[in-house]
Image (cartoon, rainbow, N blue to C red; front, side):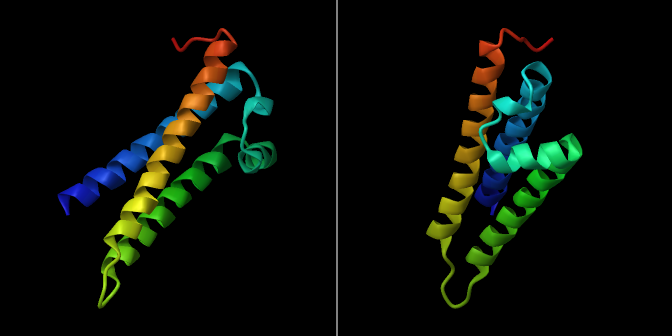
Length: 111
């Protein structure tokens, strides 16, 4: 159980890194720099609040899916649960890194 908690917290941190770097990137460069068309649509329609709500809902849904995979009876699916958590971590880190690269390439720096 402590490993699961650590994994969910790591995934949450990676996804929130993506969100924070998205906000900084959009403020410095503009929303056209975002690579994800769904995020561009959400931002264009309702701004930062809806993007943040969607990110939190995705975190909750992913955590729920992992909990369901681990609670399946008679055979829990720990490998599949680990794959879902790993994907969530990797996607968050890649998003945060790509946003940071665009942000840095624009010559903007966090103060």
